[in-house]
Image (cartoon, rainbow, N blue to C red; front, side):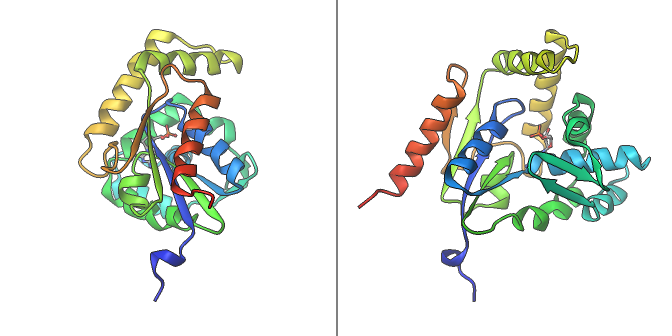
Length: 226
Ligand code: DC
């Protein structure tokens, strides 16, 4: 029988949109030499796949089938869907909004469950999303819940888009983030919420390096050098 003792360790990073979870999780994974799961990308890929294949956003069964059969490959920083590089289109606001909408479907969440758990490989996994610590990896050794003021998050997203040469409107971004938070927190299944044993970090006034340092300090506390 396989017990949890034999499974590779997991660190989870959950939190709302644009809180910096992805950058944090990726950096921690690199520092530890572990794998990284960006679970939001799987919801975004499902959204992109139904957009590409003309599947209506209210057809839960077909959406779950599409997610189960996603032909996806994560290659360094690139994401390939049906052999097309979709790394940039995945980040579009339209795709994120549709992902948040379909993420309320139980059949879709069920379809993505094992795909997410399959990322748990030696020497370890850092997984970011909304329900990593509560539903997907409840036995994770360290659970982080990253929050930041919605105004700060909108500013960060605005800067990122402008730097990429994409035009953006700060008040529209703020409104979209509020809507997304509302939907992600209030859905009945796997809502965005900290696990009871999660460490909550507010990054509103922290740099990326400071946030990374806090997580590494929590990890060091759990693994004291003797
Ligand atoms: O983290 P993100 O913005 O890339 O995620 C896009 C949407 O996917 C998010 O609004 C809600 C959904 N999601 C989810 O329901 N559960 C996860 N573990 C990750 C993302």
